[in-house]
Image (cartoon, rainbow, N blue to C red; front, side):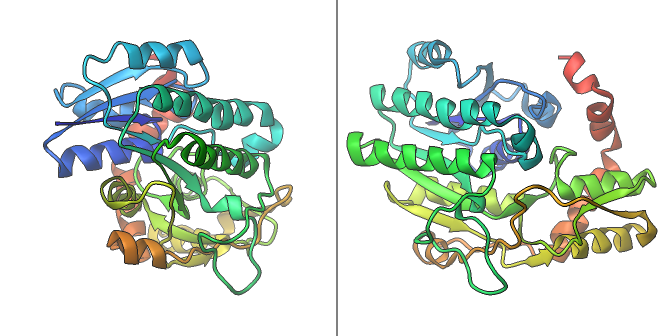
Length: 332
């Protein structure tokens, strides 16, 4: 049985990845470590709490002694680490950059040190296309694009990418870096764009749109991202970077209008607000290397993914109402 350590597994992508792996591989055991910060939600994995292939440990990856204790108490070593844990909201990084440096850089450092002392077969470092900076109206990010981050968030992720790469080059830690485009899907924390649109629209509340809404993102359904990370785990080569994109570029305003149309809500809910500081204009990923070398391709078309996502939020109102009220934090 393969033993995986998944960090940040109570968050959006991490929880979806754990559910994906348990569904697709009966011969794994997953240890989920999460500090349960504001974005860590135990409600995300209530359905598997009693699965004998799964266990949860509340651990802060910025605490070196806690990481060392976690690794030391394992009777059977971890086979691989899949590192999702990160502060990821750009707006929060602008107002509180120090927390992003602590979690994304220092936390990654402690995990790399643990993997150096107790070797694993793979260390999957999950990153973002935002490390590449902003594109103009044409072109795509490839794995060879220079890192030119423009926010404290993306700078902290770029820093952790380079640190991870150095541990492969210097110590031989089998690091594989994946860089994904904008994810969407079930269990995404309400501060992000698509759940913000859905929840506010359902409540007939104003929907804030930065600037003129022309900023373009490449949208990737979260299950497709999980499949790409699994492919990197099984078939990726240490030392390599793999870009993961959805082939679905849309402006923020297009996404807002699409969701409103699907929910039968008026565009009068749209409220244009002052643009975000350092707001990148466009991201677009070329995932050709990942498709060629890992045999992965995104399967979910944007229309289907959005439909599934809308249905999930409509049918799981209690989930997001508990976040809005704060009950998900106080009832741990």
